[in-house]
Image (cartoon, rainbow, N blue to C red; front, side):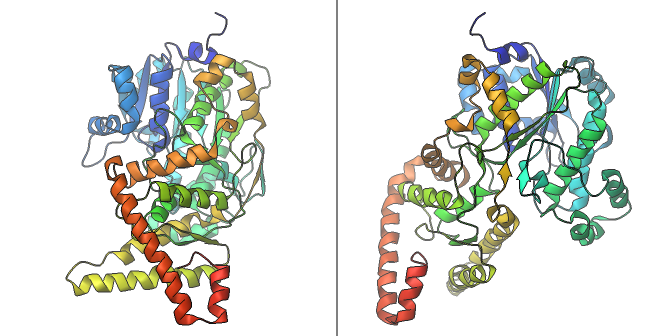
Length: 499
């Protein structure tokens, strides 16, 4: 039928296997497949926890706000979701014989999203999940009788030690088998002690192990219909199924939450460096389309494993200074009810300046506030908050102080292949993102979903924020009157938002 969705036809009556479905990206992927395609079943690999079995974890997954829309439009959508107990870090994914037989006979499409995304994760644990998980999945996929596409979700920053990142494989200086053998012989403490020597040019265990996982795929995929999807920094939803939704404090969302709360006032960041942000819903649209593309191209003779860099820097870039300005502007429009101070943020790449400002703007006020709380018989809390803020800043500073030149030809070509119906249903092009609109919804979402500040408190928060702005202005005036010398004026000119 002319004008019909080719992607929808591909997914019609297909069975999809997803690892990492309980994570941020995984939730949006599940919702999109259920709402926009007629997949037959989605098999979810879920790891049981000590206090929760896999069925309780599925219930918690479905309680997420991201599923509110589909609950209204398709009340029986969850009938297509099947739980598979397992663990990516275990041999054979920890599957039972029965579940393994079901997957190998039924699955048509795989999305391998599971990963430990903690930047400071112990190397041994990160390797078991990110590298061994990819190996175990490939072994399973090779026994699948009707597999049409397997998409491994990597990260743009798997090769972040480079200045230019193309849609190609890059060789690691160490063999993943050698590193795996070494890690098997030592405990987690010893792995932690050896981490810096092992990862070398990589800034953390996450990016290093994701690079190793890509090399596992390059060497072991064989004739599988496989592709690699490399998103940049994945942030909240732009439009679908609800704008501004996010559920984790990692990365930019944590920075935004701390800034609008008046807690984070300085960060180690290059204001002119590119913020390679991608909304999670456009990212998922691209991920869904990628599987279709891999399936179409797999039959071509000599077809290499395609890599899709999904980025904003190549077509619709913004810089961190703009990120900061948007947060501050919309932080005034949608303030937080219990904000410590009016929102502002200073960015610097100079370690000495950062240390000085961190001491003046974070540590000293934190100590004073905690001292006051202790005097009146309350528990100190500010220094605990600042330890978390500084840990977040330290773990992401590498990505806030570098800019990469990235090519995304495969992603652009994929977008150009889509007919208009598919472009409407799966709006993956980052050129369609209007950053002003995005950040307005972003701050509303951070306020609502992360800081748990409902819309009903907005008027109260705005009145309180007006008072904080007045206090801020009076503080500046008093500083000038009290100091009244040339150095204070110079300081205020250089850093007009410090006080």
